[in-house]
Length: 422
Image: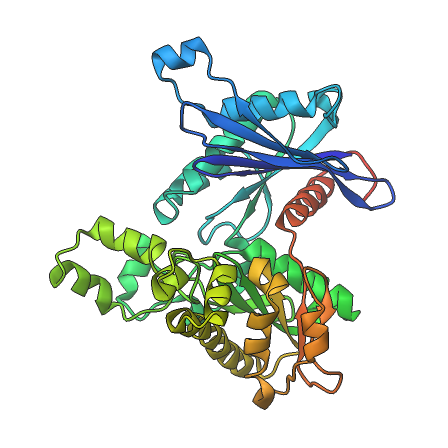
């Protein structure tokens, strides 16, 4: 049973094809992305499992050159389908081989609390939430429309980034601003990276051989974008990102928590336009702004710090300190925690960052095992000592697999797939 997962961004279309076997196993058949959507020229990056990654330019035909017609999501998906059907590199023999399509959708507001089969009402909801995710929701919807055109009759499922966090109580999601702003405009905390937090939470439970609903977890998704979640018995009670992904931890280029008066000061005292303030806080802050080395990549920041760059060292320490600050708050909120879970590009691969965090958690009952931490790169492992009361665990995320699995489970539940349960 072949399932296609689509993550449509404003300038890219990422895809993964999974095969769900009758024995309940899932394997990746192919994956990749089309880059530079919205431009005259684009490229396809494609990997068939077991073969090397290949990057090819999408030909610029005469009609496109003359009319200056940009490549859109529908055209990008057709390029993907041609590759998937290719005699040598393809993984399907017909578009009818794809039985379901799962879509990452960034914002579902308060109404989207679980995976849903996409119909006109769901598309209206995605549009309705566009003001909360103006860069993402329109692109997500474009990917859905492209799939409906290319795969007519195939069920499409939306998995919302915000859905897993909708179990938060009002005390967690409301801001201390006039309540009418929440009622009229939806100004509240929504949280993001929900699919990742959900996946690593469930995988951690499986790894520990304990029911997900019996655990108290603090999950840390650390990458270019960073967020944390406090999960109590399978439900989120707190998360660090807010109405937008800007709030919370220090990130690659995002500032995270700052005094809310700073943006007003940038406008009133520094003469910046609101649009430029938005760019500054989202694209030029975080590690990028703090380290001053021309990049927000943690690997480069650590390397610069190791070479004696004091500004980079401070940036790294601020990044760690903010995580520890949230862990302390979440630990208290949960009344203790069974484990702190690291995931994402930094969380899975950066031993120095994990060490910096765990070494500050001794008061909470977590002590680092340096050898276990140093030996762990991108694989599930316990990196705390055996006598630690709160385990420190590395758990690789797989949002695409979570999207595919949730899509299949929903469609089976709704009777839209006539196959045995996975």
